[in-house]
Image 1 (tube, rainbow, N blue to C red):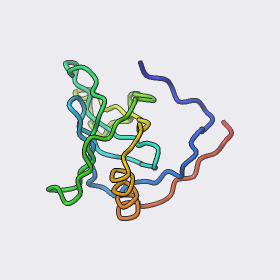
Image 2: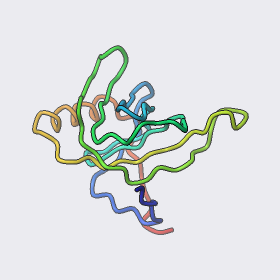
Image 3: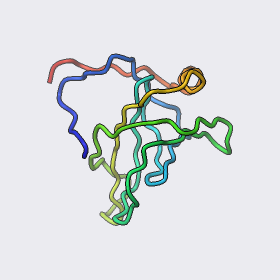
Image 4: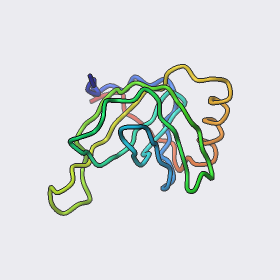
Length: 129
């Protein structure tokens, strides 16, 4: 299912931290977007044991549909336990990284607009462990 991230970054696109308040929603895991590029994104979510089967499309949304980008095809790259803000182990918080599938021209334009409007800071990655 999920492939672990290696210590070497293999991304071709610059990745950006996202301003708070942007969410990804699919039929299985609604979550808070952490960072994004034109190739994929990562998001945090509260794991629940009874999630339905994985979905193959997700939506990106801000606020009350201030921005809405539906039906983005994707595949999971990693899905790991993340540091939690909860004081106990009542909730398990996970971080999921996804790679986008083939986007339509309209989806690509809207994604570019989303990044331009909602990127907080460009992230830097080291190519060594």
